[in-house]
Structures are given as C-alpha cells and as structure tokens.
Image (tube, rainbow, N blue to C red; front, top):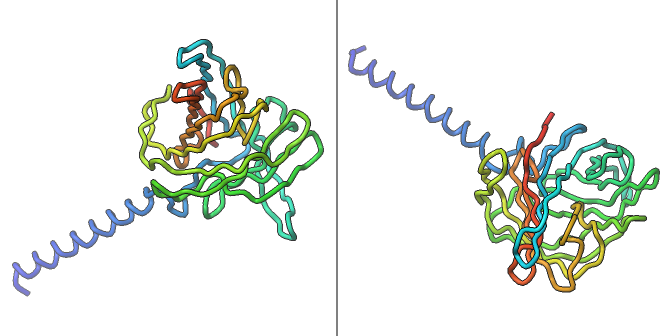
Length: 241
C-alpha cells in the first residue's frame, strides 16, 4: 500500500471520529434531549431567591424565599398512577405543597397536599419542554387559598425565548422565557408560586414572566402592571442533589 494512500485513510478515520464526537456532544447538550428536564426534581433540591417589591416601578423592599422539593409519592387519577413530587415554599415538610412532575412534554402541576389531605385536581401542562420560541398553550392555575387547593384561571401561556440572558446572583443564565397574563386576583399564593409585598394581588391584569434554565430549574420571575414592575424573584443560590 502506498504511503500517500495510508495517510489518506488515516486522515479520513480522524475526521470520522471527530465528526461522531461532535455530533454526540451536540445531542447531549441540546435542550429537550431525553436526559434534560425543565427542573430537576429530587427530594432535598432547593432554590433560594431574593424577592423584591416595587411601587409604580420603584423598589420598596426585599425579602427572601426558598423553593424545596420535600418528597414524592404515587397518586391515582382517572384510573392511572402517577409519580408526583412535592413543590413547597414552606419550611414544614408536610403542608402545604404542590404536586409536580416532569413529563415528556414539560412540567405538569396536578394539585397539592395540605396536611394529610391530597387535592389531585387535574393533569395540567404548565410549562412546555422541549419548546420553541413562539409556541403557545393554555395552562390552568393550581391555586392554594390558605385552606385548600382548587383550580383557578385558565392562562394562555407563550414561550417568548429559549435563550434569554437572565441576570442572577450566581451569574447570567441562558434561560427559557415563559409569559402569561394573570387576571386581577385576591389570593396571595397561586400556581405554585409564593408572593410577598406588592404581588399579593392587583385590581388590574398582571403580566407574568418566568425564567427556567433546563437542568437547573426555576431561576426567576417578573410581574408587571401597566408596564411597571411590581415584583421580582431572582435566584441567589441552589442545591441540586
């Protein structure tokens, strides 16, 4: 075999190996890959936030909050069994918490748990994943009133971006940006979110924007009324097991 032919075969082999490696890396890092989830759900995972309140767009006060995955269980709904995780903004491990899970089409909210009472209300796609910018769907808010869980408003939801640069305490994160408009409400806690300060309710519709970084989870929230910011949640730290 001529030397030039051997060199040709060697270079061809190197290119093929390099190409396979590159394709493999692209697949494993691409959003929506089978190994990726919108938010990692495992008991003990938590996300800490800085909660900022605004009046007419002017900062007024700050607080902190923590979202924790406190447990998991099997539940039945319409003859089928589902695994759900406990999504809680409270220090107590038992009450109250929302039922959530990552499914093939995204993050679902199902209901909640209050003390020993389960409220398995629906099977509701809240945030699509994988998703493309411009996609729209309808989610039903799973609402906690202080004494029980119930189904709230139907919220037309849209993915605005799959690569929004959101600034947090741990750096600028490339996030999926979701948005919906929430009608005027009086409840303090709605749809698996905990609000403080000026975001307890508004006599006007509220524009809500949420930010998720795949495989890291929920990292931010902004609410606006008449174009002015009323409340924000910004990730300050997280622990993922």
